Amino acid sequence: MSNFCVVLVRPRDPNNIGACARAMANFGLADLRVVEPFAPVWREATSAVGAGDIMKNARQLDSLDEALHDTTFSLAATALRNRGVVQEVITLPHLNERLKKLPTQKVALVFGNEKTGLSNEDIERCDAILNIPTVAKQPSINLAQAVILTCYELSRQSNFTPLRTVHMPDDQPTDAQREMFLTSVEKLCEKTDLRNDLSLTQRKAFLRHACARQPLSAVQLFFLKTLVDRLNQRL
Image (cartoon, rainbow, N blue to C red; front, side):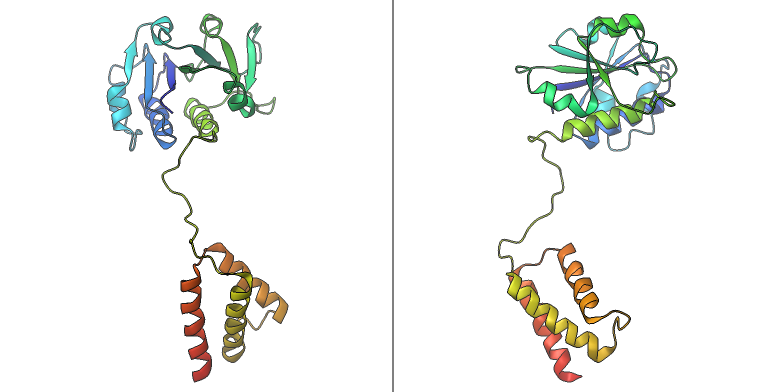
């Protein structure tokens, strides 16, 4: 995600800056640029849990022009109410689709401060507008929430690799093997009056669903079936 930078224009609350940095860290963005931060101690935000390196390396700039100098496409995040916009408007659900049409690029995601958002001049300085759809009654979104929603949407790109993924066993059991295991467990349930509040069909469905929640290899399933069979023999 190195081809994206987040630009915060005149943010007021250091902890909001920290929360934005944490949101970036969650989804693999690292380039944070802060234009005219309100507080002189903004780098010390306690909300930047796990994102201290992003805060430390964030660039403090005097103008939006400086923040955008090396970017090739910039998006001004704003609500559309009372805005006489002339640029292209890209809604968040269509962001990745629009980005696919760009050549190799450095994209700037520009967010305004918590109180007033981006000025009209800031918005006009950007190439396009990024809008997060909301109900008309509540058109604006908290700064950190807007950043995390945008970062999450970017993470849905095919080249994003999450830290944790569900590992599927290489030697997955067949349906017949799973059903044999469930039959053995069902016998044990009968002998021990376990979940006798369910009918036979309901209990099998319950067990089948429980097994499906955690993928088991054929070897693991064979071990559990052997264990259940031996318990059945002793009862």
